[in-house]
Length: 449
Image 1 (spheres, rainbow, N blue to C red):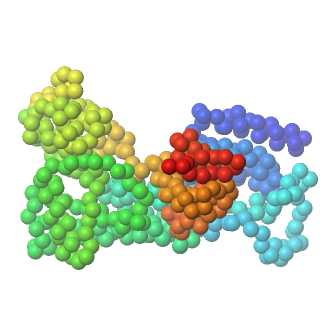
Image 2: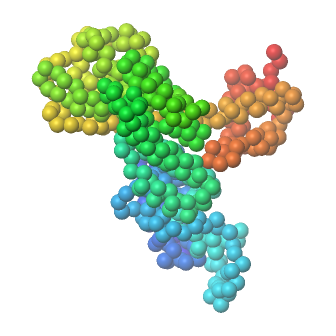
Image 3: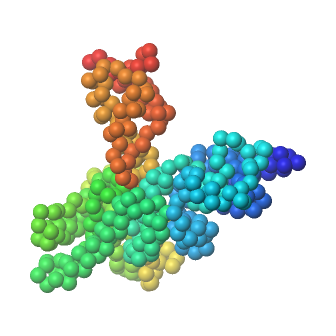
């Protein structure tokens, strides 16, 4: 009967959950509920392990699982994972303790259908967060995902609540340890220091920032502690470039031998757009602001001309310019030719009162950070330079030897680069297909020049 019920429950979960139509969040909610219920039915954890093994394997295959877990851990409002995090227990590494002997009078043997290679104690003692982390077997993966999520929050929110983020960080430090989250501490400190720097530069009468046409503030980042950013070109208007140069000079005067390297495609611009029949107040991205600024100088532009002036691709420009079309400010007069509309029907709800962050709503707020695929490609390209050096000196090497030597080059901390042997094999095989490597007799080597 036990085997029959276990099989039926397992099959039911697989049919209802483990398919592309199910949201990852829904699968996680069901998984957490299953953990709670099955622990009540079977405190030994054997039933839980048997029933949820397919769920764990399926979650491991989904690319957004880690992000969904981290988001639920640190989101406001009622959340089971957030409640678990608030308990503040240290992360259970699922290692048996000698202290178990103290409770020997209550010891019970595992059921007959238990896996003899598994430790029942670890299943009984692990909390929900520990079990979610064990799906991937590495807490570094969760810490790095939180680092990326935190960076997105700090850069995408106009007035980020750092006190709230510090509270979440302290809870996570109790779970994962201080050293794992050191980079996140630096990121939050950067934001707080930037606020103080902006306040000083705009309040000090000796600094030229006070007399500018519009206030310019900056988030000053310690680049080595933040995740990689998307690299995009954008030629900002001369008046903006002048403000950025003045900010840099004021910063250098305060910090001595330090300077700033601007990323003009990131950030926000608050605009007051005065037209003949309406006035709009919008908070948009720098690329949106640059587009509409050029229409202030000239009421008609072609995609080709404007993309050359802004130094961006025509495809990106067309996608961004659609926002101003939706606001009733620009109109496509003929294919790839856009004109400014001084008079016309404004978009509902955008006349008169402020319409802050409307650009973010229309475009679902693209992340300022490089995608996971882009980051991984960059990390593997770093490995590639080491591989070329090794094969140049040693002529040919097997996969196992290359993997062993590469592990010594992985840096420490949240930026540590881990590469499994299987992932390395796929990477090297791709280089073989691209004719950058030769593979023969189980050995990789560089082609002859």
